[in-house]
Length: 131
Image (tube, rainbow, N blue to C red; front, top):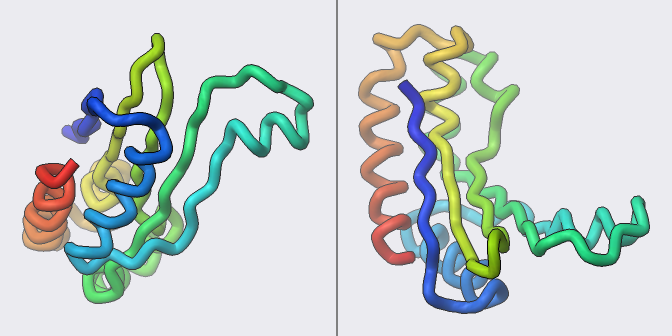
């Protein structure tokens, strides 16, 4: 089963984004892209009042290589992502394990992914605990 890590945080939106980026970097995940979807909606769809929603895409090269060594199809769901969003006047952070998703939807054999899912989970938990 794939769980979504989700938490409300006590800091403002921009601070939450910054904290996610910093926590990921301290645990060996490089930040590949940080993009505000609310900004895209404003620019492309002319929606001025969409709640703030930012996606932070991160990658740990060693973990990515291990996943690809198990199954090249795992690359179809790379990179790992965290989201920071506003909901009901609160700032929230969320993350879902792509390693678990990959095993669950058949991109890679569950048994072959077991150790990698555990290793990735430990690293993400360290990031999560810093938030």
